[in-house]
Image 1: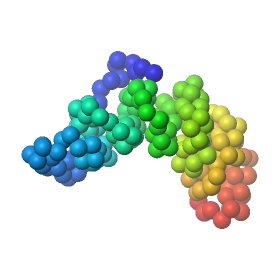
Image 2 (image 1 turned 180 degrees about the vertical axis):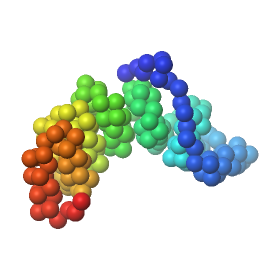
Image 3 (image 1 turned 135 degrees about the horizontal axis):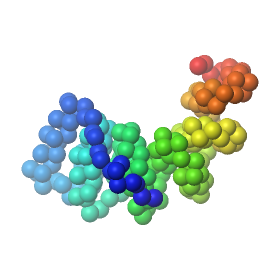
Length: 200
């Protein structure tokens, strides 16, 4: 799943204070010779990714010979949050370990942002295979993806299989019906949400 060359640029929007903390932590790690510690490296990587400094997170990631699920999850979700959706999908295609629900949710979110139904369906097959599709945070990403691609019936099918639908599930469906010009479905879902004691 390769990204067009013209979209490979990274434009991190760093939280300055968090970025400074990351630099200080990284310097301390090198000073004490702890850069080979997976747990500590993941902490630095995650700090950079969450504050929007994705290029610095990638530097830490690329220098790691041993990467675990936390490493991959932090990078993929970081790219998704920063709007680097093609990079998130490309990195996901390079994983050689079984992803978790958080990785799947980020991948589906990237497909939704790209409004790519084909890639979204491919991404949907993965959490189905590994048993994560019914988890609410994965399902909510799937609902959003199908709605953004205009596939309301598929979004409803996902909703029907959620173990514990929450307010995000209902709100995503309602917003999706509005975007897809289905006001009658919107009112039906709003009524169902109210009956389920969820408030918008």
